[in-house]
Length: 96
Length: 375
Figure 1: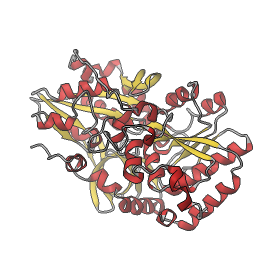
Figure 2: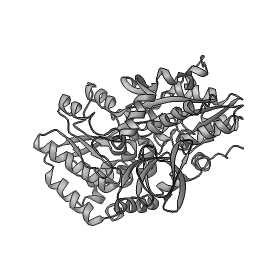
Figure 3: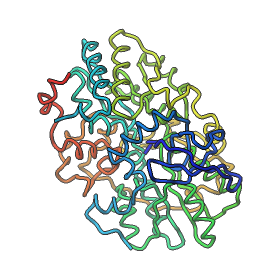
C-alpha cells in the first residue's frame, strides 16, 4: 500500500484552491493532487501514492520502474477494479 | 527456477549478489520492515539468492495487517448504517473482522465504495450532502499526508458530512518496539523507501545509536533491495552501524517538507494498538483537536464491539518476525487467500499471502539447491 507509482505530468490546473494535474502512468491517466510537490511542471515525472504526488523523479528511473511494474501486474493492482479482484481472490460474486 | 533472469538488469543483479556472497562471513538476520519489500523479496526469490547465512525477517509494515481488529469491527458497524457511504482503499475489502468483512457488508446492503484517492471520498461527500461519507484512513507515513489533506480540505471547504476513521501508524516506534523485545533477533533494518520519501531520514539516527543497529533506506524494486542488503551486510561485517540511504533518487534527507507540515497540523501522535502485536507507544496518529469534528470515532459512537480473533491464526507472530508464514499449522490448509483467517493472508503486502502466492508450501531451505548455482 505504500507503493508509489511513477507518472508523467500532462496538464496542471487549480480546483478548490488546490493544485491538480493529469498524470499518465504508462497509459492510465489519473487526476493527481500536486500540493506536496507544488513547483513540479508539465513534462516532469513524479512518484504518486493514492492520488498525491510525493516526490520528483528523473525520467530514466520513472520509465524503468513503470516498465517493471507493468510486467509485474502492479499497475493492474493499483488502478484495476478492486471489487472484481477481491471477488476473484475470494471466489465470490461482486455484490450489486 | 529462473529468478535472476527476471531482474530488469540481470548483469547488475549478478554483480550485487557476487558482492554480497563475497562479503558475508557469518550469519546475520536483517528485517525488511515494509510489506511491499517482503512481496518483492519472496516473488523474486531474493531470500534464496543471497547467502544462506543471511536471513530476511519479514517485518510488520503491512498497514492492512496491523489495523487493530476493534477498529475493523467499528468500520464494519459504521459501514452497515443506512445513512453512511463508507469509502475505503481496495486493500481493506477482505480483511477479516470478527466474523465478516467489508465485502460481506456490501452484499448485505451496506453502501461500501472503493476510492483511489481520499479526495475522491471528499468529492462524494460534497455530491451527497444528505449522506454521511466516512473514509477509512489507514496506512503508514506514505498515506498519512494524502489523508491529512482530505481532512484539511473538508474543514476549509466546510463539508460537514465527511469524516475519517483514522488508524495511521508510524515506522520508527515499531522499530523501537522490535529492538526492545526480549525475543528480538534482528541485527539490521531495511527502512521503507516511500515512508522516507515523505518523512526523510532524521528519525532513524537516534535508533541506530540507541541499539547500534544498521538502518539502510531501501527501495522496492528487486535491484533496490539487493543494493540495500549489500550495503547492510557491509556494515554488519565491519561491525559498523550508521544510517545509509540506498534510495536517494526518491528520498531526500528532509523528506517532503510540505507533507510533513500538513501532517503536524492535522494529526497528533498517539499510542496505537497493532493487530497481533499490541499497543506500541507513540506509534500512531489521530486527528488533532482542531479537526475533531471530522473524526468518525467521535461522530459515530460505536460501542458494544466484541472482537473475536481466529484461535489458530498466528499472524501476530508472523508480523513480529518470530515465525515464517509456513510454520503456522493453518497455513495453506484452513487459511488461504480465498479463506483467510488473518489479515496477513489477505493483503498484497501480507507475508502469508506472499508465501502462498509465490512459494506455496515450499520452504526456503528445500528449494535452495535449485538456485545455489547462481551466486
